[in-house]
Image (cartoon, rainbow, N blue to C red):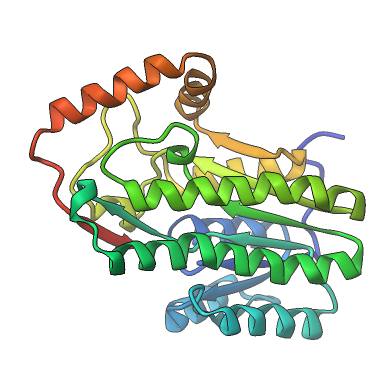
Length: 271
């Protein structure tokens, strides 16, 4: 059957953490169109509630703090109890930071790692335990092209997303015999408020795509059960470059550093 086969997501319970804005919101809207049972989970509960009302039907909103393991565990447990199963977990919560390596404080490092990496691990494992008992389910963590071809001037962010890729790929091998699937999405630049707020904007070689475009790519990757969902085309090309010619990737990073000079000032933006 084709990738757009009817009913693939119909009546499946889909939890989207970070679902109130950006890529997460676009995924929620597309899943609702596919007649999934959508749970919009976000720290910004009013915004999550508004989106759930917009989606209508069986959609509901939950408040969750991805950096609080108790909050994440409560979300997963409540959804599993009320819905009877969890078919899909998409973790889209995250924070993007930019700046020179020496500008990041220990507190800054902790914040990024707590949200992007530890939070992803907590959500992944909470959902995984439920899915193990069920014998089915699909976990999708949203990382970044920066985890496949790491740029300078985003050190905590890149470190956290590298960890998310490793977490997802390693768990996929363990999960497969139990009927549970794990994927990691690695988008290039997506036109969200998170990206727009940082000073270093994408170049013409790596243009921004819309959140709806990203959502379509992610759902296509889920249908195909891809281990790594990299998009758009330039993201796949940069990933290929990193694997086949790491020396050239290293040279390009050095050129970016020399060209940037003193322009890389600290900036942070939550999704």
